[in-house]
Structures are given as structure tokens and as C-alpha cells.
Image (tube, rainbow, N blue to C red):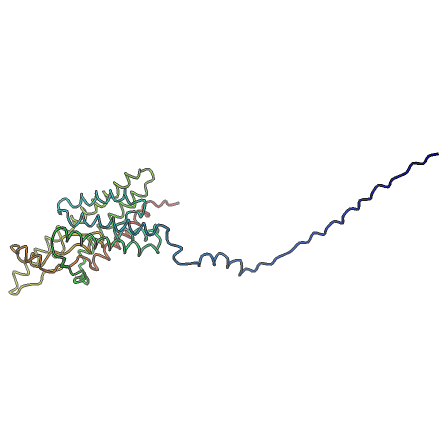
Length: 306
């Protein structure tokens, strides 16, 4: 009887189940907080916009153009030309820097929390340099002498000029921020609204300045008639109007004293006379405070009570 050879099947041993181990890591509160802090404290310049150089160049060129128009345009048509110039600047450099071209506008937007604090000195430096460059170029083109004392009357202060600058700049920033906040307007319409706001602001400040100047002249003539000595001319009479722009005020000059005292003064004598810049405390404080009021007035009027 044949026997079958039985082959043993290999026994496969099951591998022992590996024990799963759980590692618990303890993270301290101090290390968890220190991570984002390390990223933030890399450098103070990391908070700057990447296009800060473009902003500086745009503001410098824009302020140069605006100041040139102010210096070379007759006073009768100056409000219209300045308003149109600003509208064009908003369309050309508005996407780069916002086309502030005015330290008061920059301050007003900063006061209304629409501009980073770290960008404030860059805007101001570019705007002041652009205004000075416009003064130098227009002086060279016109062939006149650059005989200007920038800070000779810096300490002068007239409450009348202060309030005229304040009211005019407040009207300008009110219209500017209102036009830019309208989402239903196109870019061209917003630019036109900004230029029109400056035009209206100049008209408002002029309507306040003219009667105040006429009254100041009348008061001076009355006092001069009573006095035997030559009286000092009030500071207000040296001013030819509101600037609404500290950068433009730096480049523009007051009326020469010889022109105020004698209308028949020769042109050569007037050119050789030292002229004083319009920049002063009254202009700086008036425009900056007015800009802050006007920019925040838009926010106040648009606020919804719930």
C-alpha cells in the first residue's frame, strides 16, 4: 500500500503588533508667542511699501508741476488752472501715490487713518523738494533773481490768515475725501471731483480774503492819517491770498514792501529787493488743522448710527 507523502505547509507567524507610542510635546506659552514676534521685528523698513521710491518720485514730479502752474499763472485764472492741473495729476499719478502733492492732504489722509504713519515723512520730503525745484526752474526761465528769504517771516502769525487757510483747506479735503469715497464714480469722475474741490476751496478762501484785506487797508490808512510817523505795514497786507498748501507756500512769496508803499516803484528795484517766502506758522497750522477737520468731516457725515 502506497503511502502519500504529506508535505508540511510552512507556518507563517504573524508579526507581533507594534506598540503605538504617543509622544506628547509641551509647548510653553512664551515660545508660542515669540515666533510671530520674531518675524515682525525683522526691520522697521519692512513696514514700508515696496513702491516707496515710486511714491517719492510721483509726489516730487506732481508737486513740481502744480507749483509751476501756481507760480506762472495769472491770479485771475489761477483757481481754474490749478484745479484742472490737479485733476490731471490725479489721473496720471493717482494710482502710484494718490496724487497728494500737498503736505496738508497727506496729513489729512493720515489723520483720517487712510495713510501709514511711516510714509508721512517720505511724502512731505518729496513735496517740499518738488516745490523748491519748481521755484528754481521758473526763476531760471523767467530770468529773474532768486532773492528769497525762506524763513524771514516764519514766526509771523495772523489769526485772519490762519482761519482763511483753515476754512479753505477744510473745504478742499472735505470735497476730496467725499469724491474718493464714492464707489459709483469712475476714476475720471473722481479725478474731476478732486480738481473741482480745489477750485471751490480757492474760491471760498478768496471770498473770505478780499473783504478782510479791504478792511485791513482801510484800518491802516485811518491809523496812518492820524500819525505823523510812517507806520509799519500789518503782516496781513503782505499776503496776496490763501495757499492751502504748505509746499506751494514755501515757493511763493509775499508782496514786496516797496510795492505796498509806492505803486510807482520801478521793476528793477522790486526785483533787487529781498522777498520773503509765504511759509509761516499760520500757514502750517491752518492748513494741517483744516485738512484734518475736512477729512474727518466726511467720515462723520457718512457715519451710520445703529
